[in-house]
Amino acid sequence: MTSSTKNNTSKEKPNKEAVDTVAPNQKTDDISLDTASTEKSSGLLAGIIERATKSGLGRRKLNPSAVEADVAKNMEQVRDNPDQLRLAFLGGGSFGTAMANLAARNGCDTTLWVRNKRTVKSMAKSQMNKKYLSGYKLDESLKYSHDLASAVKDKDIIFLAVPSLAFRETLKSIAPFITGQSVVSLTKGMEKDTFALMSDIIKDELPEVNFGVMSGPNLAIEIMKNMPSATVIASHSEPLRHAVQAALHSAFFRVFASDDIRGVELGGALKNIYAIAMGMAAAYDVGENTKAMLLTRALAEMSRFGVEAGANPLTFLGLSGVGDLYATCSSELSRNYQIGNMLGRGMNIDAAVKKLGQTAEGVNTIQQVHEKASKDGIYMPITHALYAVIYEDKAALGVALHLMEAGFRSDVEFVMPHDYSNAALTAQMQAAASNPDDQEQDSDSKNNAENVTNTDDDSVENKDAKKSTAKNDSASKDKK
Ligand SMILES: NC(=O)C1=CN([C@@H]2O[C@H](COP(=O)(O)OP(=O)(O)OC[C@H]3O[C@@H](n4cnc5c(N)ncnc54)[C@H](O)[C@@H]3O)[C@@H](O)[C@H]2O)C=CC1
Ligand SMILES: O=C(CO)COP(=O)(O)O
Image (tube, rainbow, N blue to C red):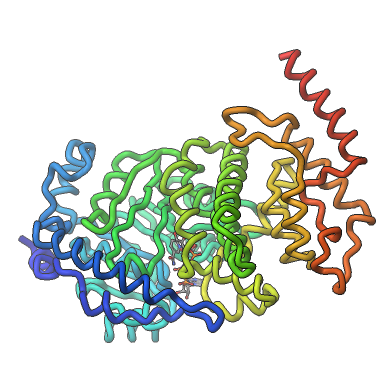
């Protein structure tokens, strides 16, 4: 048994103190956490944790039969010796820290790279990430570094958990030190102006590496509290999928596998848009029916966009799709939800971002997806509506009403296709948006239902256009 294994055996017990005494620091003045429900659930959780640890369900004592069958078959070495895996996590925010902590607790040789030298010193001394995860003790085997070269050299897997805006520059910086390492993105966003997803950037910058993306309903603070969670590792490399499963799997964190890289990373990126929408809707005190409608129409948009980008629509039914959409749209822990909530309470986007002080990828993703969908004729009415409210100063209530008044559509378009093509609808929407009559807005009439943006226009003039498009569509379908 190695020394790190020995250390870990004694660390089976989750840090009860951290579970009980958390004071998450991303609470804003406007949004208070539901402490009563957190307390109620922590009683239940404590029971689960106790039973799991007593029965030896912690990663160290995991019964091989409980390990994914494929891991047992193909990754015997890794499964039996996960502490032999050498991992680097780049990004000292809440998610990089939470994931590095899981791996360290599992006995992997784990280094967390943080760009700021002073922060590294403070983390090593306090074994805590005071800025992003205040109150949570980190595993004592976790190593910290601000030296990128030594952090990534001789590692098996490099996990990137920097915001999307820093993803490319981080890859460029590690490129000279890449020998045989694999790279896994934990980042949920889209690159500004290029529409590139993180896997595209990896292929651009490190064309030779074996890579994957990991995404799922993984609110960092819940993971630090040992609340049972699950995620998805997507890669075309089976050994990499298995290695990531072995590295992070525990009684509290289950890692599922996929080979639909596009679908998994788009789920993580797109759901941030709708978490903003849901946070905003919550500020307007909408009912559960409305939330359910928003959530499922969001899923329709996500899978529609995903298919256009080469994803499998069924992936959106998994953890990285509906799972993450649900978690982020229903939790005040979500930073994107918090942004939406602040907007719904009348703050402007710049003030909300400043007040949050943390990463909210959705703010950029709305702009990227709005632009890309308009360009490629992908019908994304909620995204366009949100864009209009946030960046064109349209009235939220008017925009919402207009969405409700939109024409008749199919529920699940993969079951029954829409009458009109998405490209035709997008074209109509854009034509309507350029109609100056519909654009008229002034601050006095902000809440006027007449005063709406044209995200899903069904005006009389456009109905004719729609009819003729529909005719053309059905004629072309008939020809086929
Ligand atoms: N926090 C969460 O619950 C989850 C976050 N994610 C994703 O992980 C990514 C990172 O988010 P968080 O850790 O939450 O962010 P955060 O806001 O907690 O921290 C961001 C970190 O990135 C660092 N950073 C910023 N610019 C950098 C640069 N140019 N080079 C190096 N480091 C830089 C900051 O110093 C900070 O340590 C995002 O794409 C987010 O969507 C994914 C799953 C869950
Ligand atoms: O992606 C997340 C949970 O899965 C975190 O969401 P936020 O970035 O909105 O906090």
